[in-house]
Length: 115
Image 1 (tube, rainbow, N blue to C red):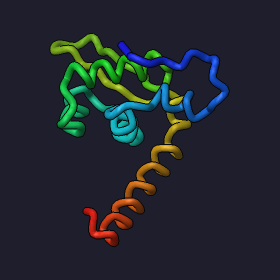
Image 2: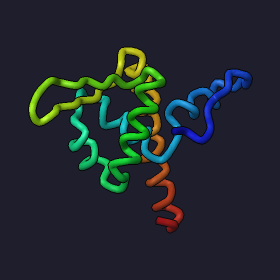
Image 3: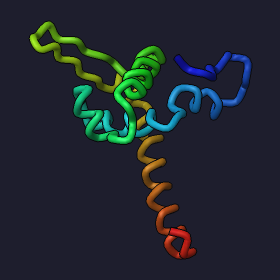
């Protein structure tokens, strides 16, 4: 699954945070789950550059870390939804701060002519 996992030995809280939500797709997945439950195919549409296998892997890791809950419904065809857990919702301020920083950085880059 994950290539690098927090081992509990580091005292750095940022390292702990990055071990849970670090990676290319996890923050984006979490951002899209902030507003409620999402089906897997809906997430694939919202994160189009991620392969389905990568999305599945990232969702499994987030579920294993306790920040995402996976709901499986006994229906045909199968229905699976993902949502932030109660603890996962504590990441909402972090995600909103990341969005705000990204918007600020985009403006900064446009003033530098590096966009």
